[in-house]
Image (cartoon, rainbow, N blue to C red; front, side, top):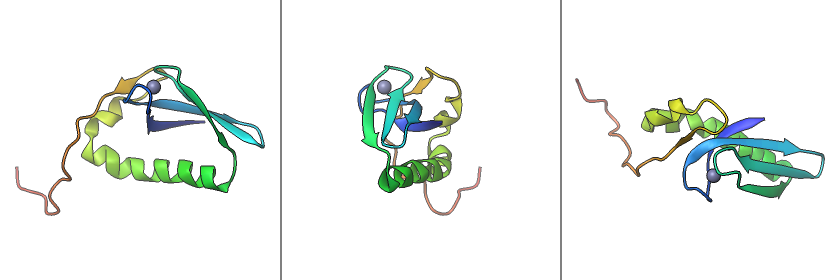
Length: 90
Ligand SMILES: [Zn+2]
């Protein structure tokens, strides 16, 4: 499976692939090829789910994330304050 995640190695948002057997999940950043293992347990599965879940609101805040589509894509995000609660008129 693939998720969009912030890679701690290249410090970019990238497509991260996750392969797992019953014991270990291997995360690979498709941009810099950094890999790390996590135990494939409920904690990791929950983490993946929450990353996916939070992506919607994150994409709203950082529309650049829409550009992440294919393996190897990467987006460097500037830290940005949260948008104001009430939408301003344009
Ligand atoms: Zn990376």
